[in-house]
Amino acid sequence: MKIFPRSVPRSVLGLAAAGFCLWGAGVPAHAADTTVLRMADSLPNGSFIYKLVAKPFMDEVEKRTDGKVTFKYFPSQQLGKAKDMLKLTQTGMADIGYVGPGYIQDKMPLSQVFELPGAFSDDSCQGFTAFWDMTHDGGYLQVNEWDPNGVIPILSLITRHHIYISNSKPINTLDDLKGLKLRSSGGAMASTMQEMGLVPVNISAPETYESMQRGTVDGAFYPAQSAFDYGLTDLIKSGTTSRHVAGVVLTYAISKDAWNKLDPETQQIILDVGREISTTSCRGFDAAEQDAIERMSAQGIKKIHFDEADGKRIDEAFERSSQAWAKSLDERGKPGSDTLAAMRKAVAAVQ
Image (cartoon, rainbow, N blue to C red):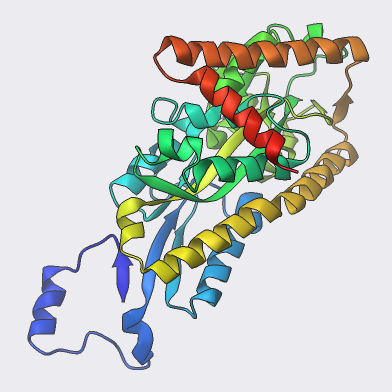
């Protein structure tokens, strides 16, 4: 059995050299041909992301490889926090890690272009498909960001965020949001908040509940499903229900070292399954997101509605946020404007 990336302990090698049997009774003969991939994330057990993408991916890869590839799954920050997942994957602590560009802005600033408000329509499949195209087959983000970091995204998800307020302040207009401190994952999301008059506070997803409970923040930009996963609906008083105000790019990425140890047939199976799930699970995501919004309403969480005039102001804030994001990267010597143009072209090409 091959388990990446750990090496075989010296004690085991010694036993093998001495002629001892390394496999216990009852283990199938083909077990020696099995590859076990260590897959890690920071999500709570049973999260919607696990149900929609991670578990179906693992099950289908195992099925199509006839059990020659299996997975050892480490949820709930067992191997490390979200901000550490890229490094854990690069160094081999995990073969496949939960890599979110928003958590590692210094390493993957360009991929956050899909986190900009209005990057794609409320049909999530448009965003998922465009992101996959840009990170594979010589795509813009593959060449400029993922290859240099030594990882390959094999599953992707772009969550749609709404505005959720955890204090009792009535929110009837856009101006009512001014000055409120909201949880942000940073980067493009933070820029959007600032353009809308909000104060972004960088907090990881697992820390959001405590921050809202203590009043460190007045709410959060969050997907409805994640709000349930992390128990935030116990604290939320009001929230928007239409038009997402931000997104977060989430991937499961495999290190090139682990990838290169797989045979070409297995590599193709992993890519095929990853693409299928990444570009079709969006339908389930959208349906589940709408269901979560309806559950919030049934729970008594007040819906925030903005009128047409405020809607226009929000659109203008979205565009300012996008341009400010691109300009800030340009000023750092990174291709922000080029990336924004490439993203919009990729999104427009998705029918």
